[in-house]
Length: 95
Length: 494
Image: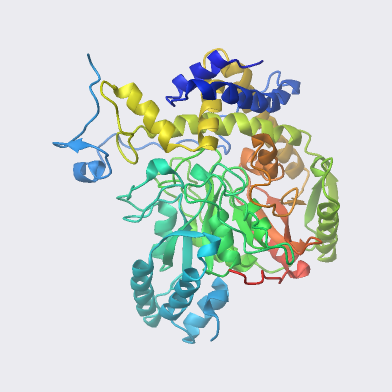
């Protein structure tokens, strides 16, 4: 599988990372190197093998569905680049 | 007592309890040493005021007889751990200015036990790297050099600052984290000990996430005994991490008897790589002889899927990273790009992440995005997870045959020069070829310094243990350490 520039541009878009047009050929080439390395996995016979979901066999713990935390608005907002009137502020989302 | 910063945890603990030294004295010795070690670029956020306050408090506790093992011992904390009110950037520009409102469970456990935090340690950005060259703070430097050659060497990565600081005696020990070898490879490159415990032993809560199914914290120390002491203090069951194990944490230090008579040590054929340097091969043979000398039975074993661990890792780790790092969006914390007139929220995300992430992080986030994208999920991500099942089964099979631990080289080479390997990402990834299997299988693994190469650089051996049997693994490492007798230290040039 070879990645072209338009695929590289699509991946960058999906990842929400701005990549300048002139950087796309180098990026596509790096992807191809790494994917070429990963390609070895196609040699492995995985017929009937379950994909791993948890590396240690364990059941997730359950707990009562009740509020255990909260009321820390000031702390939650303390590191925000732009917080106003108790909210996170972002550029206009809806036209 | 001269040169208190050179003490290990066990010696310093005993000296504190005997009243021969105070935590304040230990702490001042380390702070002085850190001030003179700017050239190593190991400590990147110094916290001398916090350290002095904690040292005074520790001395009171020790006097009162309420002193856990770590009480009063000055250590460094990898920048990946969130520390309340102290910069915690994961080596990234995107977390510039971030001051956590909370303490990670692991660093909290250490501080509750009375440990003294000297500051935060350099690392590869988001723990993605094997040379500490992807850090926003610049390279951490290995205190070791090739003889009289002044070329700067890598301390390894991603816990490069931790390794450099411990090897150079800037602190008594340090925390590290290990997703594919990030504790064990730098430990081997700097002649120190580092253990990654079983997945789930240490809580991941408050540790900046890279690949959640692989990440584990662990200690980086000057001896196996120190690793046992510090690991016990770091481990706990934590309801805030659903993958944290609800198992009692043993007294690991008490398990260090050095007696490994009759233990079965596996030597996996697949770890003999083409083009492996002669010195690594020799060291591995010596390690085998040392364990045999201690009474262990050496058994040749096979772990047939070893070769596929690294490519499977480079699907799974980037996939998890692309998901975990989606949170850096310029909204809740860290960096936000300056926006142009008319820029909307998508431009904000794209510009923020382009400015905030370094090249290696961008590369991995995008690879992860690709392998998870529609049409490729089965071919890459699901296939890698199936291969992971097979890798784990390889280990289960040999443990079922009665193998107690597995001996391998820790790294395929000694420390390399900064800038020597950074051009080709895949070449850099090969650093983790012996360590990454352990993360894929969730097992405990420890790197022990065992010798030097022709240029005088340290080399390490790795022991891999059964799940949850860190105590037994540490004891085998203790027997290996005693026979290797590695005492070399880097000559001070910084």
